[in-house]
Structure formats: C-alpha cells, structure tokens
Length: 250
Image (cartoon, rainbow, N blue to C red; front, side, top):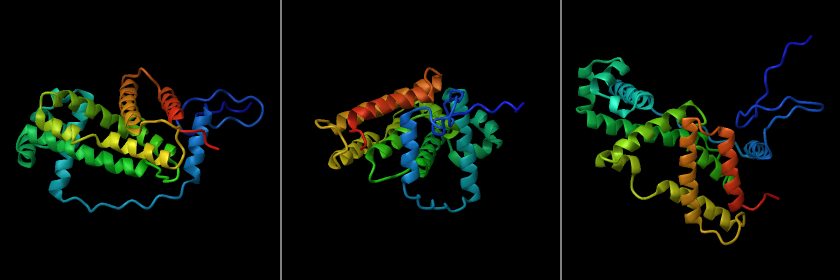
C-alpha cells in the first residue's frame, strides 16, 4: 500500500485543498487564486534588488537594539520595553543602549523609523509590479497590510503596539502617522490608473474607494492577528471588493 500523501494546499494562499477524486488534483483553492498565480507568471522578471552597503559596527549594534524593541513590543507590549529589558533582549549592556540612543524615547522613535524603512524596502521586493495590470498591483499593495508571513506578522504587531502609545505621544505620532495620507494616495493613484485604462467600472470616486480599501485591509489584518479570520477569508473579501471596482478581465 502506498504511503499516505501529504495534504495538498493552495499554491497561492496556503489554504488546505479537498482530497482529489478522479482526474488531476487541484492546485488552487479558488478561481481568484488561480488568476493571481497566472498574473504573476506572465509578469516580466523584477530587476535585481540593490544590495545595501555593509553596516558599520555602530549601525549594526543600533539595529540589534532596535530589533530587540520590536520583539518586546510584538510579544509583550511596548509598556514592557524598559531600557534594562531592551538591553537584556538585545544581549548587550545597559550602558551600551544608553550610549547608542541616549534615552528611551529616542530609542523608541529610532526603532520605529527603522521599521518603517525596512517595511518599505521589503514591500518593494515582494510586490510584483505590472504597470499594465492595475488590479494585480493593487492586490499586491493591499496584501502588505496582512500578516501573511512572519515578517509582516511581526511588523503589524509592533505597529499595533506603537499605535496605542502614539495616541499620547506626539513625537511617536509624527513618525507613526507621517504627513498626509500616503497609503490612501498610492491606492487612489492605482485606481486612477485603472480608470484611465478602462479597467474600472464607471462612476467611481478613486479617493473614496481608496479610503475604504486601506481602512478595510488594516482592519482585516488586525482580525487575522487575533485569529478571528483566516488568510483565505480575508483574501476572498478583498477580491469581492476589487470586483466592485474593476471590470472582469476579458
């Protein structure tokens, strides 16, 4: 008797697939995942990422300390991030933390700034940019709000911890929120690109749609962190809303 085969999962979102009957086994859990996989295959290869210069010893130590702040914030909450706890988590002396950052507040601000830069770089590496497919690009952007892997899960937990503190800390709020609404501007621009190419349904207000999509994706990502929704559920919900914006592909 053959050994029992490993359970099959969707090649895009990782959802478990029902056991195959006759014929070829399923590869994707839904038509939307199948279409997403097709769009990714037909896109041109992305350029090689720019390799950053090796950090100096001081920059490397500052990163180690900042990453310790992230782990504490994600695992226990930012209120547990005392200078002594951060030093212990980073495996350095308290004096070293004070030398590199001066004060706890300076450290918290610097750690948040570094996380923002890391997130932007990783998002650019992950997003399959296809200028001819506004929906595929918008889907990739919205997926950056979801904890679909360990990196994004950690970052979203840290941002959640910082958000609560930013409500009473103007300096953190300035870093956390930034000026204007750049995410909504980006999404509105992609929808506008789709409208210009005739890929969107008529009568849409790109800005209002962007506000709803960004706030919805953020809320759905929070539900995933709490375990209230699965990745497959959230991706289906996003597809449903994108179906309202974009016309069906020919």
